[in-house]
Structures are given as C-alpha cells and as structure tokens.
Image 1: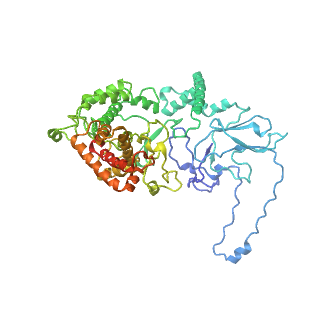
Image 2: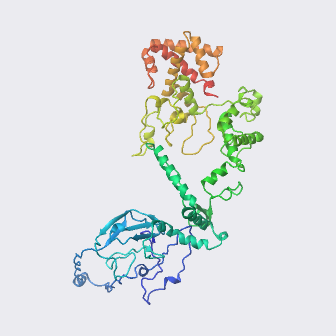
Image 3: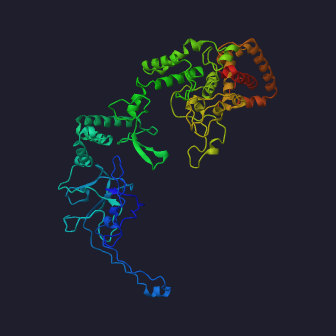
Length: 608
C-alpha cells in the first residue's frame, strides 16, 4: 500500500470521469520512469474515478446565469437540506486500528492483518513491513455474530457516506484461508521478491538485488544467525546494565539498505545523472574485496598496508606537536597543494614503525622525545636563522610558544593547584561575565555561564567545557581555535593581550599566589633560596646572576609597596576561590605573588 502526501497533485491531463465525451485520456501521456532502490514509483496520473470506482457520481448542478439578479437568486435558492436522522442501529463489528497513524510520505508499505476467528477484536493483529505494530480496539461488539456477509469487500472506503482514502494506492492484494504465523508474516514482504531475483543468474544481479537476497538469507535461512542474534541480545542486555544512570549521547546506526548518492549536473538536485555507492577515490587503493562498502570496510581500509596515508599523516602530526613544525609543514594538506616533506625517508620510516608497532602512540612519542634531534639544544646561530628560520632542517632543538591549554596546565601544575583526577564530566572554571549571554539563544541550556567551585576550577584544560561560538578569553588570547571549524595546525602569535591574561586573569593570579606560598614554605628563609626554588620549578635550572638580581630588586620594591598599602596586599592574595594561607602575612605573600607572576611571564616559561 502507498499513501501519498496530503498535498499530492493529480496529473492535470487526467480525465475527470469515464465519459466518452471527456478530454483526451491520460494513457496518451507518458510519465518518465523513475528508478529507485527499494521503492515502487508512485503514479500521479490516476483519475478521481480510479481512486474511488464505487463512489456514486456527484449530481451536476445547473449552471447559474451570470446576469441574474441577487433578488432572483434568493427566490430561487433551495431550502437547506435537512440532516438525515441519526442511525441508532447498534454496531455489530470488530474494528481495530493502529495506535499511531502511518506517515504520509509517499513510500510503499506492506500492510497485513490476521484474524484468528475468535470473534474478539483481540484476535486481530496488524503488521507493517512484516513487523507487528501496536493497535487499539475501536469496536468489539461482534458477540455471537459472524463476519460473513453478502456486501462486497472494499479497500479504503467503508460506505458511500464515508470519506474514501483518495491518495492511497494498492498493489498485489491477497487473501489467505488461514491466519498466518508471525514468522510467515515477517517473511512475506520479502520472500516473493527474493524468489524472483533468485530465479535469475547471480551474475546478473545488481547491488540492490544482491543486498536483498543476502539480507533475506541471513535473516531467515542461515542457522548460525539465530545463535548470533541470541548472543547479541544477551550482550545488549549487559550493555544496558553497564550504562544505567549514564548520560545519553548520539550514536551512529547502520542503514538496512545500501547507501547511495547521485552525481548532480552543475550541483542541481533535480539534475541527477548517475547513482554511485560508497567507494574510495580512483587514485587511492580500493576497499577490501568481497566486503560490503560500509563503515567496517572503511575502517579496515584506513589501517591497511596498501593505504600509507593514515600512518604518514598521524606521525606527521605527532612530529608537529613535539617539534613545533611537521616533517610536512602543511599538516592539514598532504595533497598537491601541500608542502613537500623536508625528510621523506624519515617520514616513511616513522610511518612504517607506527604501523608495525600495532599503532602504539605511546611508543612513537617516546621514540621522538628520546631522539637526538629532540634532545639537542635550542640555541641557534645567526647563520642557521638566516638559512632555516623555521628550523625545518632540525639544526637545533625545538623552540616555540606552548599552546593555550598547555600554558594553563603549566601554571596550575607549578603552583600545586592542578587536580590530577582522570575522567569525568566537563567543568566550568573561571571566565569573565556576560560572554555566553551575548550570543546565547533564549531557552538554551548554555544561555548563562554558571562557574563551578572547588576542584572543578583546577582540572586539566582538556576537561574545560567549550561553547562553540564563545571561546574562553584566556584561551583565545593564546590562539586556541574556534570549535566551529576543523583545525590541525594552530597559528602562533605574540601580542600584548597575552601578557594581559597572564598578569591579570584570576586563574593566573591565583596560580602565582599558590606558587608563592609553595616557595615560602619549601624554599627556606632567604630570598635567594626561594628564587632558586621558583626557577627550578618553572625553568628546571638555577637562575642566572642577572635574573636573580632583577627578581630580588622586584621583591624589594613590592615589599615596600605592600607594607605601605595592606589593603592592596589583602585584595591581591584574596583573588580566586582558593583561600590564602593565613599563617603568612599578607604583605609578604603579596610581594612574592608578584615575583611569581613575573616569572610565570618569562619568555623562557611560556616557550618550549
């Protein structure tokens, strides 16, 4: 059965009746045939007579004279037809309908119902495409009567006074002398079609026919499938138990039919030329033979030996993360518009090593950071800078400003505030007010930013909640990309806004105060000892004499300033949600907080 949409337009060339004096028959008008995967073409040239052959003809009203006066019309107006008396004959019938209406989308559906002869509405079952659907009982008043009748059987039209199903088509109507079982009903929509296909040689089947025969065989004939389905049901039940109480997320689901796309002429959706199925470009290795072209085949192809792209692209991105620039500088483009590799043999060797190690990413990172190229010094000569300013030839060790997330984590780690918890939901740390509200949509659950408390303020940056169109300002200043586009290679800029963040953002001021508390408690009594410890924490070496002298001079100035202004000292050490150590005088802690902030802003601190 096919139910067209409510706005289906009847072909304008179709006749309105079977009268011999009507216009030209619609048979003379040939509609183009539409080739579809699994649907039957829906005819749009059926006449109203074809749609309701048993409905009595409407009585023709005599034409009205155009020049008749209004008064004459009122005189000639027929009196209103009285409504027929209400039929109070008791209904003796069984009436069952589907709980939910079928969608009017123009697709063909196999409708089947069975009756067990019990005289009860509960004995009627309705199936759509072989699967039982939920039903509701409308009438159950047959009692001791029978369904045998002399009235002719009609589809889509109960009586002359009822509204017929005008946009409904029927094909291959069958009556069975017994109630079919649920298994027979499930096979019914497909078995006949598969039998027709199987009668032809297999080498003449197209992809749709091969798919239909395969699905029918595995679902109805192959004995191993039932055992596998039982295992799947058991595993699904175990999976449901594991996910009880968890958050729902979007998942992908394979379509039961083959996925297709159409080649469009000049991009026009109505100008389709050729239908193609999922496949790889002709200039790349083919998908595994003998397997359906689905996501599993694509996954196998992605990591196959014949496809070198996956390993090459991945190790190049690892190299870019470690050294600041990839062996192929354009990490996002390995095509003809991208850069040539600076070390082709090295890229090949790393790709093979990655694949043969079982795609072990930890092994590859360890291999790179323990290499001689990575462990060499970052100092360079003027000649090297003139010849290779980007260090693509690896004449010295990597030197580049760290990414936004790494900088925040370095500040939290050095101060001792970083929470090392692994996993869990995203968190909402410090953020200026009215960021989300400026671009939020009414009714959205992300209209207002609600900052969290406690450990959520100091989780690793990878757990920070991201709003796609509202970048965190401290991350944005350090070139973190927007999340509405894909980015495989970040730009690195140096702007005054970055110093504004590291010296004034509450996250960085709080980290500087916590670092100051740490060196005061662990570094000893002398300023030199505390400065040495702070340098070891942030720079991994003792400070030079010049650096130590500059930091001691800054400390002296800050001590005098905050000793004269205790309120400013108290305001500084009160920044952030974490409480300051009350055992340390506020002016002393404030002075060392400024020294720690100064060291956190060193180029050597934020540069790898």
